[in-house]
Length: 438
Image 1 (cartoon, helix red, strand yellow):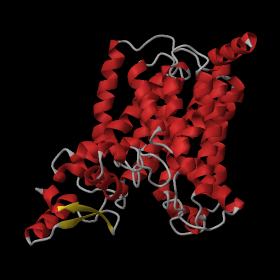
Image 2: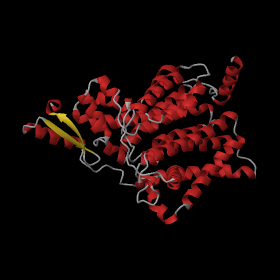
Image 3: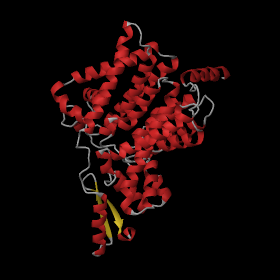
Image 4: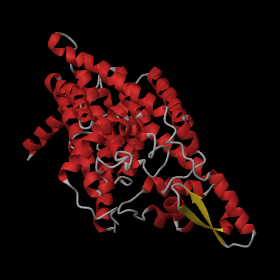
C-alpha cells in the first residue's frame, strides 16, 4: 500500500509541478493593472455597457426573486435546473441589500470581477507549465476577450459557471496557490457548476501532494453538487433524440471553429464554406497540440492530453444533455443557440494549443510549422476579436432595468400590491411586493 502511494505521489509530482519561483513585486503590480483593465474591458465594450442597465434571464427571474422572497439558507441551497447556483445566489443576496435600481449593475460588476479573477488564476496557475510569459498572458487574456464569451454569457451570473469551471481547473494545478482564498474559490465554483465532476480525476491526483486544502475544498463542493444533481428535478429543454453525426458536427463547429472565429462570424460563412472550416480549424489546433505531445515534458504532455479530453468531454456532455433540433448544424444561427456551451471547451482547447506552442522549440525546418502556427493562432484570435467588436447584435436592446423599476413604482402608486419587474429576454420578469420598492 505504501509503495502504491509513493508511486502515485511521484506521478503527481511529475505532472503537477511547482512553479520555479513565486511572483515578485512587479508581477503583483502587473496583476492589479491587468485586473483593472480586464474589468473595464468587460464593462465598457458596447455589449458590456448595455449590461449595466439590463438584467439577464435567471439573474432576475430566479436569483433576484429568490433573494427577495426566500430566507438566506433556503435560497443558497435551492437547486434550479437540476443543480446548485451558490455564487449567483450569493451575488443576488448582496444585490437585495442595495436599492433595487442597482440590481443590474451589481450583477454585471460581480460577473466581470469574478471572470477577471478566473483569468488571473489561469495566469498564475499556468506558470509551472508554460514558461513563456507572453503566451501565459495571452492564454489568460482569452478568458476576457474570447468572442464566444462576450455575447450571451457576457457580464451575467447565469452563465458564469462556465468560466468558474476553467478557473477551478487551474486552481487545482496551482501548487503554491494562497491556500484559504483559492480553497474558497474552488468550493464555490464546484457548488455553482453542474460539470464540476469532470475535474474529479485532477482533484484526486492533487490529493496525493502536500497542501491538500484546495483539492479537499473542491471535492466537498463537487460531491455536494453531484448529490443534488442526482436527486433534484430537471426539466429537459426538449425530448429530441440526439443524432450522433449531428452531435459530432455541432461539437466540432462549437469548439475548434468557434474558438478561432467567434460564433457570430461563423454564422455568416459556414453555410457558404461548409465543413471545410472544420478541417482548417482542426489543422490549426492540431499542429501545436501534436508538437506539445512530441516535444513536451511529462507535465506538458499531461496538460495537453488533459485539456483536450476536458474540451471534448464538456462539449459532448453539454450537447447530449441539452440536445434539441435547433442545435443541428444546418439550422440558421445554430452556433448562436446555446452559445454558452462553447466557453469552457474553447478555453480548454486553447490551453492545449498554448502549451504545445510553448513546449516546441522553434528550430529546424521540420519544426517550422510549429513556429508558424504561433503567428497563425495569434492572427486568427486577433481577427476574431476584431470581428466580434464590429457586431452590434450582442448589445441588449430590450427594456432597461431602471425603466422597468420606474414603471413598477408607478403601478404601486396606482394601488398595486405586487408588480412585475420586466427584464431580458422577453417575457422574463421578477415578481416584487410593492413594499420592497420603497
